[in-house]
Image (tube, rainbow, N blue to C red):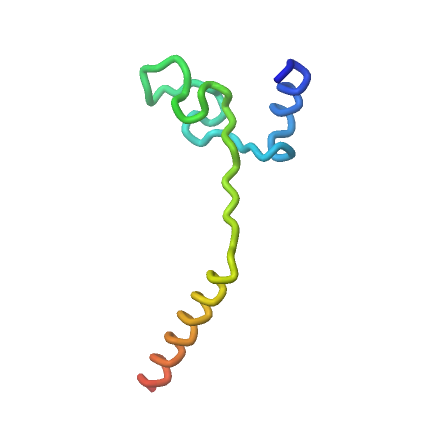
Length: 77
């Protein structure tokens, strides 16, 4: 990654799928550790943003859970 791309990444991390490292608060070093670089982000101060992908099976699972809860509520009434 060249200097121009690195600067763009630092200025607009969301655009490239990165977020500020919560371990070092984006500084790249952490007072929590004795290392010179943050062990979570490698000193960059940014980490890849985790994207949770939903699958159709997730929807079916939560639909079944909701139905089960509704049935238990009706039985208790």
